[in-house]
Amino acid sequence: MIKRRTVLGLLASCFIPAISKAQSREPSYLWPKLRAASLPDLVDRLPKKPRIVNMAALGRKPGVYGGVVRTLIGSQKDIRLMTIYGYARLVGYDEKLALHADILESYEAIEARIFTFKIREGHRWSDGSYLTSEDFRYCWEDVILNEELRRGGLPRDLLVDGKPPRFEVMDKLTVRYTWDAPNPDFLPRLAAPQAISIVLPSAYLKQFHKKYQDEFRLASLMQQFRVTKWTDLHIKMSRSYRPENPELPTLDPWRNTTAPPAEQFVFERNPFFHRIDENGLQLPYIDQIIMNVSSSEIIAAKTGAGESDLQASGIDFSDYAFLKDAEKRYPVKVSLWKRTQGARVNLLPNLNCRDAVWRSLFQDVRVRRALSLAIDRTEINKAVFYGLATESADAILPESPLYRPEYTKAWSVHDPRQANALLDAVGLHARDDDGIRLLPDGRSAQIIIETAGESTLETDILQLITDHWLAVGISLFIRTSQRDIFRSRAIGGEIIMSMWSGLENGIPTADMSPDELAPTSDAQLQWPVWGMHYISNGAKGRAPEVAQAAILLDLLSQWQKTMDMHERTRIWNEMLEIYSQQVFSIGIVNGAHQPILKSARLQNVPDKALYGFDPTCYFGVYMPDAFWFGEET
Image (tube, rainbow, N blue to C red; front, side, top):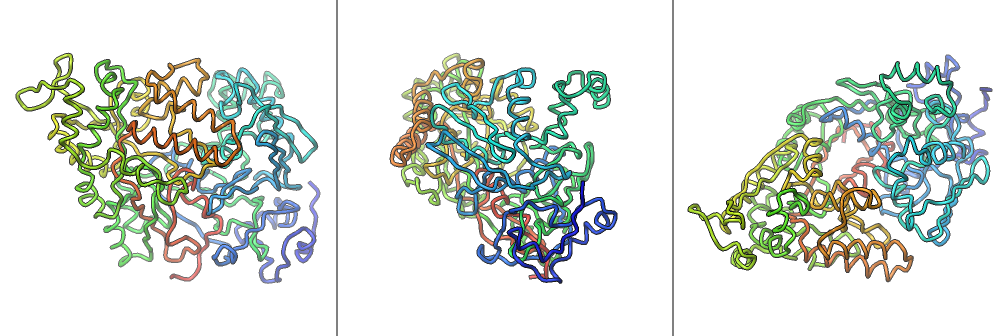
């Protein structure tokens, strides 16, 4: 690599604002590498046209380099939070949920089916190799289209009417994807928390691909990393969403330096990150983020004991008073952000459960409505959320332009008399000596609700619902298990009802996909088998037996084929109406608050914001790479 020694005053000619001599210094964290000439100067590390983030225009303060942020995670797998927090995407959302080019210099979308992407000239991966169209070609031709690596076929997100796009390399910095019909969800999927992967660091990954690597060297690498197939080796070394391979080049603001297993993961600044502020300082401002693994049950206690500089995961509203009290003992500040889920807690009757009797009952809308009407949400809101949440079905929030009050109120008002009438109408007249209704096969109507056991809030709410359902002749029991086991049991039909959060995106616009309202994923706990059928293109699972669920899928298909805004809005509203009236999920409250604890010295962290996985990516759209340490506030 030829090293160019160019005075930083010339950065203006590279589309970087002029910066003062005092500001032109490199981050001190990189000084050792710069002195050793193992790292190029800033002007050589940045793309020719970096993305300029104007802090003042965003109502924030330009920062300074340095510092370490400590945070707590519940398991090693949670290092994936860094991929979400860092939120570097080819195309991404801003705070107002408008799409813009991020890693890409620009993009063009014609008829929502022809997408042309322009790569920033001189943009590099974290190991210094250049990002070019070859990285897109490698991902498409050698990974996505490789039948050995993609045994399940192409990702459904890349198919329109069952057909993939035509991929073209236009030049070294330009690629194009062309579908025969519109694919309006392509850009939002690239901006998602777990984005579609269409680009990979080819220079690094080719060593693990049988097309490019000598078979004897490949066998040696397989032995070294303890896998028996080259495909398993490639998958293991290329996993970016959960960044367990410290050698894998990234485009994120921080890169992992620690291989698992470990109790502490150190993420250090990516010296080739593509964003700068208006003063020409390269983001991120923060040098390191250290993720300390802890038991989920004691994250709140450790956070309140001053062991975290930025914390949201592992703490809940029930911890707010305790965390607020920590402000008296430690230099921390606690604020409340509004959660974006359609329901903070949500009951999901498994319409695909193995138990034939419960499956038949749950597929009857009268049973789902009765179970919802029997819940006293006002009592739960006051007892658990201090009355600060909104008693609601699993529905979108007022912050969404698609919001209607009737979605919130659908079958969510406490009415045990109507609940009893509905259960009687289903045929559940007979009761045992304890007043519990009898099922058609003679069993008592006992519903075991399973949770991932990650929050005491869930069990507190379920204990209240136990009394509510007892009043209508339904017995409730609680079972907890680890998240992975919990999900696999749900997919296998062993769970008849579960508790999870509601719609992930409670603040959608008509341009965002309504796929959450239809059975489109095996992770949807109310209909995982139908969801599996959808994502596998019919190869696995089975099609919906409930007519309204099939209608939702048909409406989703209509949304995917139209670009007319009025038509998209109509489809969204029709799907929301069906989803709320059919009570496919039983929401309890939404609009709940999420405690956010930060160091009193940490700047640019909003006092009020929206908090959720999709589309805000927790901290992601608020740009943690723009957080910095200053004087205590």
